[in-house]
Image 1 (tube, rainbow, N blue to C red):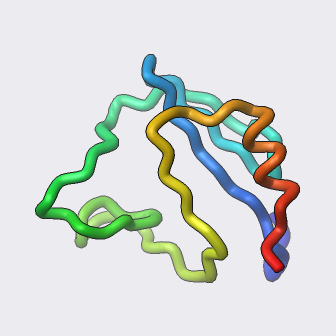
Image 2: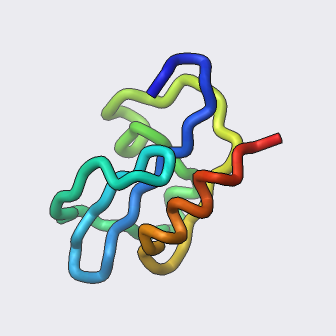
Length: 87
């Protein structure tokens, strides 16, 4: 990715734990996700690059959009979303 240039970054996790990372619609990495994606009443925020309030490397930049789906999007859906650059 180039600095100061819009990029579409997306990650999916399927029901069987396969995690995929997409950059500008192209699958760049695949791995196994063993964590937990869940919402609780206690945590009422979404963090990027953080685990809770103390661990990780918080994202410092601009986000045009954040989507949270109840299913893993397909590669075709990621490519289509990447082509929709923000105005």
